[in-house]
Length: 389
Image: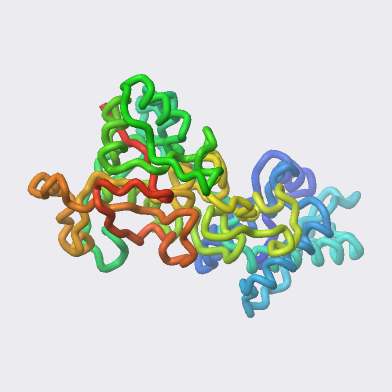
């Protein structure tokens, strides 16, 4: 489809049908390398064999197309008329010069309409599904459990250009990172067992205190001490960036900005009407999500916004403390890698934006800012990392 050829070609009908049943459709870029990656991803998701993971009805497709059109993602490209797979006819062989002679005219018309619909959907949507997580080397677990019970996922690291195309290239050693932010429940347990002063509270923001929401009201020292207590450490800024961007250098952990219904907890709330009233299953298939949380959201929410390493909420929900002092020339010098010379009172880096962030650029994987180490506000939390051993 969309390539001027059918997805499967064989010597006879039985051969083609066998391939259709036993093999996934080939990727679009296998035949048209110039097709944008997000279009390739969209087509691949639209053709997936499992009906639970694709749009199933014309009404649902119409809703999704309506939403995409309203959100300004309509592209002017007119796709070529695709040749679609067809149902077999009694003939047992195909004419040598036309691999489509076994298509009935009525079936061809129906498949052509369906193919064009899928092509439009592919052109309108961005980043339909996340790529598989980075794979750990043989013998290295893909995931481990931290001493606090939080699942930690493998991050490959490698060469990283800090902050984007103008940054200095540094090497990041592989490591594990908490899949989700540390919750109030876990931090309160830490305070209880170590007889440490409790976190700061905000009575005017009741959602901030829910057990499964990310902890806020903790200073950089509080976050560091929790990590040490469970055998972890705060991530270096370069580690945080490697986990959020991956080897694809994503601008946002999930890929590209998707407007109001991007899968991130940001300032304000989003109603279903703003997202075309698509079902939650359809939203998830598009990598979208209703931000229905006026304050923080549960740490296991916004799964559609996961990074290439399958780590969630690296954008939005709460800003996250990093181990490094803040240097203005971080991107061009990599000075954050040598933090031993910085005074303990130096402002530290926070990353990712929060539920109070309205500007999309401040939710990107490249945005950074500094906060005093004793800050205990309602928008800053943390997660831990652990080196490979």
